Length: 312
Ligand SMILES: C[S@@+](CC[C@H](N)C(=O)[O-])C[C@H]1O[C@@H](n2cnc3c(N)ncnc32)[C@H](O)[C@@H]1O
Image (cartoon, rainbow, N blue to C red):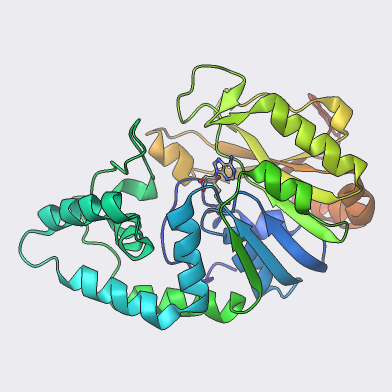
């Protein structure tokens, strides 16, 4: 799993956690739906394990979804375009980045976006209040070499070509369209990181809306998992999801993640994974055996705030 292809770094990517997360997902599903797909780390890992036949990748960020559509369906075109743009850096690499950024803000061209993602600081996608991409270049690096980029693009395409649906909808619309035999993996934006001071929101997502959407999934009997809040050292991000949703929470200790690096801290990051009631009823045996095998890495919280005895 460590060698899975990944074309770009992305803030909040689940690339390093995918192996842990997949341990709790169903062994076989018809379709994996990612309403917040980002760089699709969980779909890539699931495709590598051949545990889903089809995938629905959705992200509100249109150029990002268009980019993944290109990567998966037209790998040669996007790899060629990247090599061309990368090759134009000539003597003024930083100036070139700003030119590409300007052009991207005028056109929203996903090919330009790939270059920006490959070169911007820590894969952290930032927009100003007018919705213009304003992240700076990483001055120490010139961006992934075209040959390496091509290899990663081809790898992702090999895993997912012809198996995906791509949309850039609000997640709520996706959730109204999921079917009973789908499995939904949700990775909404981090709370506490993107700086919205109103605690009901996290990066534009209303907490109560989110809870309502989850309640609806439960009522429909749709299995899902959510990477939701997190802890960094003693600090907890995010509002706790209500007990009425009957979710089980797994804590995965991830060491110093890209998240803590981004925040410039040394603490250990704990990532929470919430499992829906009908996922739990399918997965219970696997869950128990994993906790016994890896007691130091994982903690099962039976209810919010109460650790199960076997784990610490
Ligand atoms: C934490 S990232 C997902 C990372 C992903 N799991 C990965 O491995 O790269 C959250 C994503 O949610 C997207 N997003 C934010 N608000 C959204 C919304 N209302 N509906 C759908 N997607 C949204 C962001 O563009 C971002 O790509």
